[in-house]
Image (cartoon, rainbow, N blue to C red; front, side, top):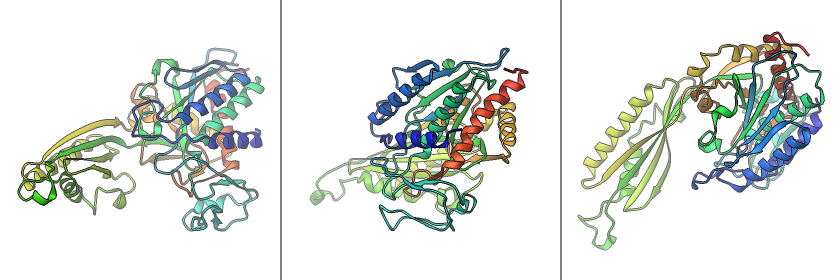
Length: 416
């Protein structure tokens, strides 16, 4: 496995600003995602893979042809090209630390940003590794450009080593996963696969087998605007009503700040508007899908209470379905997880099944009928200027992809 070539790919990818933008309706939501798509499209064509296409929606497809001596189930790998809207992805200046000696890592672009060992215990396990960090002013983009680079590098390795037995492998690179639109324009039939793996999990040696089920509550508050000098008895301030509504949400429970593990939450993340109209967006998350209904009912009750407290205010509650727990669909294909674990063990690693307190493209792909566990990519602290990755772990993740393809072929009795 060529780790230096993997590093070059990764650095090329993070140099392109692909930050998703929830405020626009286009797909992809930012031009950089198409720029990156065209770069990877060119790389795949140069590698000689088949069916390379950047489709009308900007989703990139390709196929690695089978090298097996008999029919083998088609498998797929998927990663997303966008980065989080929460932190800038423009002008990323990676810091390369070779042969990491341990200790806190000060980021040169903003000395107040420090990757501390006591907050990142994983650093104790990567002494001697080559680390990639930001300069502290942007995120790094390992989520999910590390996953992208690993899939492309695994593709290069397989194309250059045709003696490795594997079945047909479908590749897919989506857009706007970070704003929940990654699968909106995905034709699930194009995979033609038995299983898909997203390479979009932070950490190492982990297989995400469950995600949250997720809805979003959009609450539109309508008030009455009038000049404040004559507002007595006439103004209904939508901003004030929206603020009151948020203040009624639980704080000591059912909030991200007070929950972990399998606990769900209601997370108000945006208030916007003015006196005449304001909007509140609230994320609803739980591993048990039925609990979303009780959360939605609670929000409707709070809206009705606010309408009573602020006579004349009107509050519209729109509950929007987002994605469902990955684990529900994975029960139909347990070997998807078992073979991923076997591939890791072949590499001398110890696999860990983990839940993820969030969602992936795989959540929705699974819901559409294609079981899609999520694999780790060797990075940490996503969405943050403190994001970092280990090149050694990224190389291992690339080997995991290659070995997983072999294991699926062997499970069908195939050889070269």
